[in-house]
Amino acid sequence: MLLLKTDKARQELAPGMRTLSLRERSLLLLVEGKNLAELQAMYNGGGAEIVEHLLLHGYLAPSSQAPQDTPAPRTARAKPAAHTPEAAATPEPSDHLRSLAGARMYLFDICERLFARRDPARAQHFHSALRSARDRDSMLEVGESLLEEVTQLAGAERADTIRERMAQLLPREPRALAA
Image (spheres, rainbow, N blue to C red):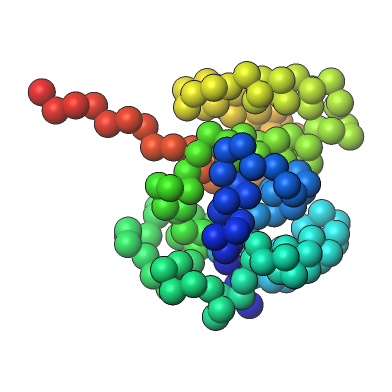
């Protein structure tokens, strides 16, 4: 069963809203395109409790009960499939879901998962850098620095997956004005 974010979840992920924990918010960011079993397995099995809480409080809905204006992630595609099979399986968020805050939360979560226990000083360094990133370019710069560390720690394939998701979460580049 696929789960989708509700309007309540989108409001929670909007800048300035902070009613859920970091793990709950990060799971909300990652929910699109993932089935229930994948989400429940997150956080060493602790995802099951988080999913149950989010369902109970109206942040998530099964895809069959989702509002009509939210397309099912794997069936409706406005764009052709991306160049990789994994990217094709995960739909790109619409422009109104792209934000620096969402990308920052995703990178905070990656940082927590990979560095918080192994290297707290490195985790703190990246947390500070992410908090200081105030525009798309600075967020990309911090993200690439983080991805260099991920490549060394978890491999190039994992770093590429994170890079693709980060690109999906960041606001699009401003288009140059036609001359």
